[in-house]
Image 1 (cartoon, rainbow, N blue to C red):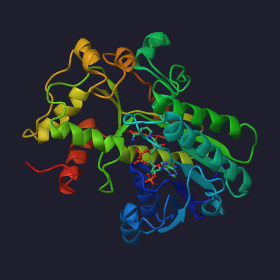
Image 2: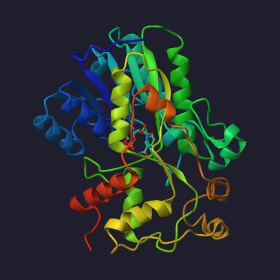
Image 3: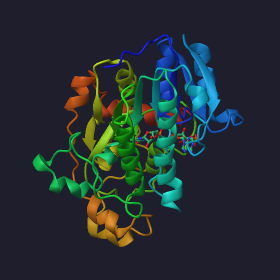
Image 4: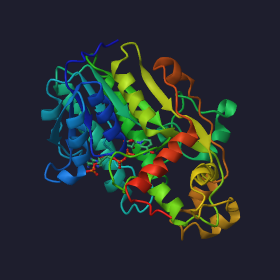
Length: 352
Ligand code: NAP
């Protein structure tokens, strides 16, 4: 059990990211001293939204330059911190050219790099790592091999590799490494937050986050003829940020935490948007699996992926995070509507 001193700075890696920006904001709103890393301090436009937030908040924010693949680059930002929240990791599920280089190395070696600095920084008492439900299971079809048909924190992804579901593989090997490194010492402890697909308003106008891209593509009419069937896990970005902070400051909390609020299909997602914005060319039905199998390579998916993922309803047990961190989750419709409205307000989706 580690008690974190709230007067000490908190390090959040990858502050430019969709999720990390919300973690930084919530920490600042609590009046804390926050440090965050960015890949390049020169690219001010990537973190201008955080600078603006800091001015309006009770807290203090400092930026540091660090890259997951540059050894020791997180050390300066970490000096004097008791709590490290490590979120930086590439999140890409399509358009991947070299999975090893683009996903696995930054996730795995980046985690090793950050945790080696944690080992070398005497002040650090706790690390909260952003993992994912994709470290819990690989293909949706794995649900059939799961006792009780529900994934829990006891499960691990056994079916992904650098060649099949590389993002899921990158998150799995990174989380496994973290658990093995924490076991080699006793000064700092480790908690992981394993979110489902994160949705909800973004604090920046970036569109290259996979979560944001999904909304943009739905609104564009790209999936007008239909979406793949099957229920997946969704959670609001603000709730995921809160879970990280609670994990940091709840002394008795421990272990992995499935952070999943709702099990919904892409059609449920489209319907939630349609309720508020009926003028957009949103899908109204599922694409039959045989048709999706046929067109998979054109849509950027392998047939193996479609075979093992389309049409399965994933079920996750979120009772541990509710108990251990006292989490409750926003309604799905609120998350989706507020996300869509933010994209309209920021001009990322055109008004109709
Ligand atoms: P995001 O907006 O793409 O943020 C990713 C962050 O990682 C960015 O700050 C990015 O920096 C940083 N990063 C990537 N490669 C880096 C490198 N080589 N060195 C330093 N920083 C690097 O994605 P996100 O959705 O917020 O994801 C944040 C975390 O949540 C990730 O660990 C992801 O796996 C996890 N997660 C996300 C979801 C989801 O649905 N979004 C679900 C479960 C888990 P740049 O701005 O410089 O690119």
